[in-house]
Amino acid sequence: MPSTQIAQNIAFVNWTVLTGLAVGSYGAAVVLRRRTAATGGYLGFLAGSALVLGFLAWLSDGGLPSALVDSPVTDDPAWAGPRAAALLVFTILVGVGLIVRRIRPAAGAWLELAALGAGVVVLVFAAKSWGGTTVLGVGGLLVQFVVIAASAGGVFAAMILGHWYLVTPKLPEAPLIRLSRGLLAVIALQIVLFWIWVATDAGPAAGAPFSSLSGQWALFVWLRLIVGLIFPLIVSWAAVQTARTRSMESATGLHYINVGTILAGTIVAAGLYFGAGLLV
Image (tube, rainbow, N blue to C red; front, side):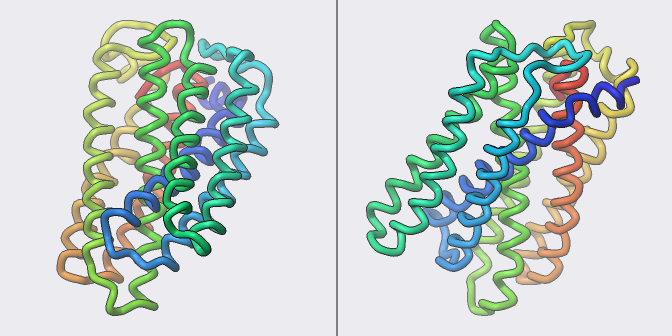
């Protein structure tokens, strides 16, 4: 049963969600600090959330099974140590950066970039762990991890930022507009990648083009497309429009909806990869 294969490898799905949220939300904090007038309190809270999520991801990494069950995906144990070490380095640098930023802002800025770089390394090592032995397999999975981190972390950051307008009424609307537009662009990219991967039947479970749309995994594939990508794209567009008119409560509510649908789509996408070997 497809659902059983996903459930048997749920630890890898959990790792993907936690790591994506940690790296993506921290990346959003780094970009927003340099490109918008977002407040220091908000950015600090977002970085602190990434710290907690990174620590949880590191704990989950230590509990991963040594092999996947009934899955075409193989686990290369040679990358388990480097992957866990990179996650720990990312978490430590995020924590140190939070402290140093208050004392020496210039040094803190460099630490933030180093932490973000460590987060990218985590995703590279994860792709090497589970992407197979080909450049195409590793590269495809790395792209998937990057866009998942950008969408999951981005919507988490947008939802929290919406709340900041309740306590900082004079905060300009530009930060939320830019973040919402960025999220909209990432989801649009994910839809393009979805069709590229479906058309080429990307992933370890090689098959005929578009076969995943009608096979035993079709229900989950269509859920990924409709619930996890198309619906969030529409909601993100609406969030941009409401933020532009400074209807911040409406924009925040829309991002609340997006948190649920994007994370649900992330879970389905990770489940399809680790359970069925499909990139979607």
